[in-house]
Every structure is written in structure tokens, then in C-alpha cells.
Amino acid sequence: MSKKDKATIGLGELKRDMVRPQGGNVTEGQPAAQFTVKGFKKPDFAAIGDNAMKLSEEMKSLAGEIAAAVASRRDAMAQIDSCGDDDLAREIAESLAEEKTAVADAYIDEQLACNLTFGGKPIPRRCAMIAFVNAIVPDDFGGDVGKAREVLLDLEGKRILVRDDRKGHITLGAQRYNVPDHWGMTDRLLGEFRTRVAKLGFIFDQPKAVHKDTRPMEERADTDLATAMKTGRGMCLLNLSRRVPRTDRDGKPKLGDHGKTLYEATGMMVVEFGEGYVRPVQGNGQIEKRVGEMIDMGVEIPVSSLSDRKRLNVGHQLQQQEFYYFLDFWKYCIRGLETSEADQLLLAQKEAFKGKATITVEQALGLNGLGGKIAFDQPAFWQYHGQFTLKVNGQRINDLYFLATMVMRGDNPCIMVNEVPEHVLPLLGEYVGKTFDISDHFRAVPYAPVLRAIRGQVAQALTIDHAVIPPEAGDEEPSKEEAEPQVHSPVGA
Image (tube, rainbow, N blue to C red; front, side):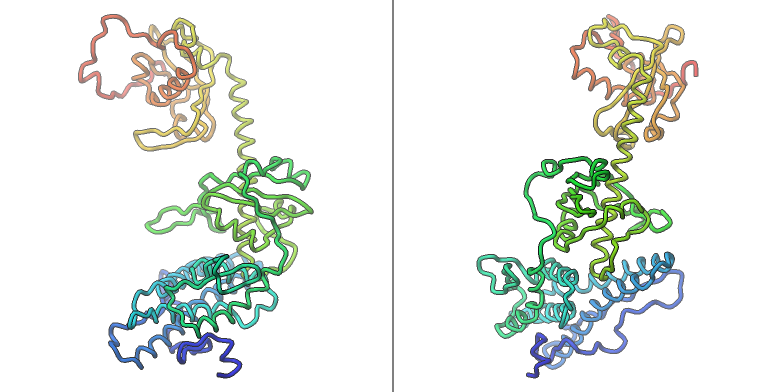
């Protein structure tokens, strides 16, 4: 075996530099209404039967397809980097890259999960794994730590390498790994595999950007975001728990299968400010894994980059493998910053609403020892604590509050919504300025579930002296017609 061959894992005649069969490349479709990405040729071992030579050729072809799939992923990312400041070209490249990488990843994962065996040996799966390793582990990383870490994460994610501190027979720095038995590796192949992945060992010689801590996230934060932005120091907790639609460069929501809106990953993240930079420390929820990868990659961005919310500027050149980790972290920070600003705005708005109320909601309802006497003609601040869900249509709303006044229309006590914040408009906006009879537990009020829910929370917190509208003695059960929901016109609207 030549020196060149020794640097490559072998499987019979299966080599890393094998040429992929003609015509199997991922190609653009013919001009049509919809751009499509062609898939990769799947092996058809069943059609070959037990012809060993033909089976061997089919596996060599499979190795070429795996290498092409990896190259397709790499080329898609390179095309994005080549777009420079051309926003339109970048948008097109990102859209194509998303589709190309999805096709390539699905093909690779399918072949790595192949359950076909020959004499009990998972040779096709082993063949696919070896081809994948040969394709993503270069002969020389050129000192590119970011690229090497990304490759290692890929090998760990596909369980080609599994951490085993006690019995691991592959050592990378101070970390020990094993290759699971289900890959069916022989002693010779394991030796060649160990030689190839040893190229990743230099990762562990690099200083860690962040010391990992297992304390709860809330305990690690020692300041708020606004203070950290001003002082440039401290750890703070960013809230990324709100569902935010994924958008393209024009701000339009991205749609997935069946036209459904795609949403950004959610969770919480602790970040550390210091020395002019901000770096990830810990994450949870849907973003936990990604934040962990950012930490391992040593991601950090200048605090000044948070001032420009349209373009990331890290102050130095990034390798294409590093780019998306830095970009995602920057997006997480921007989302956390925007959420914090929105929360402050909503808090100020809520306080302004409270300032317009002249009585409490308890007084408006005649509760808390008021003898059932409703306070009329004075606005009260109504609030539901928690997420309110309208059972009729499943509509949900957070931080539900509004101003409403009890008024008399003739002999009928009524309620009138005076003002609602913008985020409550879809629920109550059409009722502003209209009055509805509150008798019979708000039966004539279109938004009765809201009022009943708020009254229920207030009642739980108070010693109730009387009901809002105490039923009169001798009341009979309502007839079937009366019990059915009715449409009531506003009283005195």
C-alpha cells in the first residue's frame, strides 16, 4: 500500500479519490416554474443478487454518491460566501443551499442507516460510513479549528464517534472515543480510521473560550441586558421563548410543507459581555444544542455588532464552516435584544393603562366586602394573569389587559370597553365603545369568557362578600331557548 493509500481508509478497492459515475451529480432541473434539486443514486443491492463483483462495484458507486453529497453541501455554502454584498444573489444562494443540503443530508442519513447485511456483516452501512468520513475529514485542516470542530460535531451527531472516557480506544486530546459495533469495523479498518480522525486532535490543544457551568441559568445572570449593553460587562439572560416566524430578506414569512409558516427555534440563553465582545455561555429549549456547538466553536462577536441589526460584522474574516455559528449567535442576540426592548415598551404601556384607571377591578365587580355594589362610570384596569385561551376557536393571547367601565343603560347594568392595547385588538377591538348587559353572569357579553376568567382569578385572591349580580330568590332554571347562546345587540351603542 502506498503512502497516499495509507492516509485513506480502505475497503477493498474503495478509496477516497474514487470518481463518481457519470451522470449522477446533483443538477439543476430544466427551466420550469419551480427549481428542483435532483437526488442521488440509491444502491439497488436486491437487483444484483449474490454476484460479489457486482455488489462490490455497487458499493464503490455508493461511495462516489456519498462523496458527491458531501461536496454538494460544501459547494452550497461556498456559493453563499461568493455572493459578497449582492443581497439578491445571497438570498437566492441561501434558498438553494437550504434545499440542496436537505437533499444531501437525507441521502447520507439514509445510507448510514442501511440495515442490509452480507453474512451478518453490515458491509453497505460500513461502506457508507467510511465514504462519509473520507469525504468530510481532509488530509490537512490547515490549522482551521472551526472547520475541525464542525467535522467532529458531525461525526458525533451521526454516532460514528461516541464519547467513552473509560474504554475509548480512540484518543483526541484528553477526550476518548469509541466507534460503535453496529458499523461492523474490522481491526484493520479501525486502525486506518484512528489514523484519519487523529487529524482532529489539535482541536483540544486550543484554549476554551468559555468555562462550562452547571448552575441554573437564572443564577448565572448577574445583570440585565440594558446594563450589560451600557457597561460592556456581566452575564445576562436573553429570552428567545416567543414564537417568531422565519423570514426571508424581504421580511416575508418562510413557508414549509403544506404552506405552514416556519418558526425560529425558541429557548433561553445566557451570554457574557466582556472586553468588547459578547459570547454564549448556556442555552436551553430548542436552541440548547446549537448554543452548545457555538460554545465549542469559541464563537464571540463584538458588542458593537449588536447596533447594526441588518448585517453581522465580526471584524475579521470567517471560514465558511464558522460563518453560520457566528450568524446564528448574532441573530439570537438580536432577538433577545428586541424581546427585551418590546417587554420594556409593553411594561411602560401597561403602566400607562393602569394610570388611567380610577378604581380597581374589585370595585368594578362589587367584590371584597363591597356588598355587591358595582362602582359605575369609573374606568378600571382589567387584567388576566397568564396566557388566555378562547375555547371557541383556540385563540391565545399573552398579557391580556384593557380598560373598561361599568355603566347603567336604563335599568340595566352594563360594561363598556374603553381602550385596549394593540396586541389585544384582535380579541376586543371591535367592542370598544359598545355597551353590553352584564346580567346573568355576562351572558349577553360577546367576550364573556374573558370577564368570567378575570373574575375567577380575582375571586380566588379575595374573600368574596357577594356575587357580582346576586341571583334573585325564586329564579327558575332557564328554558332550553334561554340556555342556548344568543346574539345580543349592544345596548345604547
